[in-house]
Amino acid sequence: MEKLVYYLKRVIMNPQKTIRLFLIFLLAAVVMTACKKDEPENIPPDSSPVQQLSQDDNSVEENVDEALIDAGQVLSGSDKSMNLGIPCGATLDSTVIVNDTIIYYLTYDGLNCPHTKYRKGKVIIKIKENTHWVFPGAFLTVIFHDYEVTNVFTNKKMVINGMSQLENISGGIVQLLGNGFSTVIYKNTAHVFISFNGHPPRDWHLTKMLVYSGSPGNLMLAVNGFGFSQGYNNLISWGVDRQGKKFFAQIGESVVFRETCQWLPYAGEQIYTIPAENLKATATFGYNNNNEPISGSECPTRYRLDWQQHGHSGTIFLPLIN
Image (cartoon, rainbow, N blue to C red):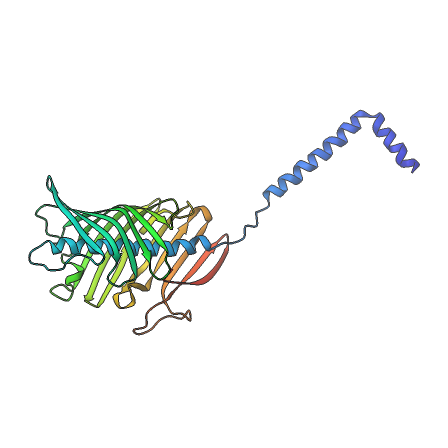
């Protein structure tokens, strides 16, 4: 005790030693703080953003494609040699000619033909005068104005605004497959804004090559991406997801759909990247409720999602209808 009292007195009486001791303690604290900052943060993995993105992107592509097929049907039905009628749940309000462009105003308020979706809103279709949509090289423009699609199974809703341009690469239309046409190839470039269930609209780009084949009731669709943005190629879509994060979706293997399976994807791979989350995933299509690959005429109900983030990885199976 006497030694401790003696030592404290010496320190108090010697200000230089006191200052030196204080600086040593301060330096030690700074070093320890710096070391803590250098230690890597242990960020828990979270694959939920890419799960949501993969489901949203499938729905966006499907809903835009359906409206484009309707547009081709309307244009082909305007040719006197065709008798295809107006798409299910829609009415043709009017047709006008402005300069050298024919404009069709289509209003939706009803179920689509398979009765899987309820559609509302307006679609405007434009094509150059004296252009026949069934001919190779024909272009059409589709403008979405509050085009609302509700899934009748889940009651989930999306609203689409924006514009899509479709080129008929091969000639022909999907409705005439098996009747003079064995393959119909379209090229779609779209920039739309998607609102999911009333949330703020999100920016969505689509660059898709669509190859239809088969015959009515047994049609098939193979899809590939041709887009390029910020170093990503083979893009089928990119933009901003519902969480406000940039995303990129590439085709790994052609994604194939069957009409007999409600146009659900039954083969192929799609790769999703969300850079801000350091999150990447590959969706492999063609699984059943037992999370096993489908075979024969079996229809898919689920898809496999293999994800990686911050050195972690995992696999999850998700439903196709969501």
